[in-house]
Amino acid sequence: MIKGCVTGASHIIKQMPCQDAIKTNFFSPNSFVCAIADGHGSSACPYSDEGAEIAVSVALAVIEILIWQNDEASLYSLLQSIKEVQLPRAIEKEWKEQIQYHHQQKESRTNVEALW
Image (cartoon, rainbow, N blue to C red):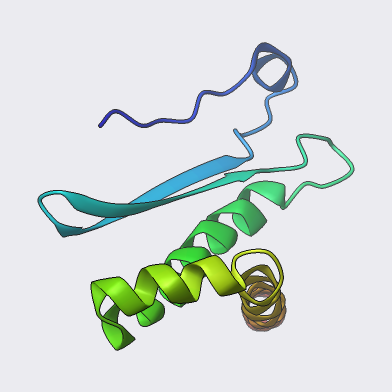
């Protein structure tokens, strides 16, 4: 498998980071999960790169829990039944919580730095 994210020409010109993310976890030599997030890619969303990184980490974490809690046959059946609504909702809910936590941590660091 080959993976990667490439900073687009407009981002290079505007000195913006790549706002996309990709992450994989291997569960065996023949089994892996890959999460991909396409950031907003605009100057109106300057933290989109961080949001994309959090999104792929959260997606993998949620799916990892399902993998470890189920055998192969029941996992496939479970994923078929939850892939349209419940799984995306669970990932989105956890992502929003992680974004809020990340934002609070950034705010705390900024406030501490302001004291010095």
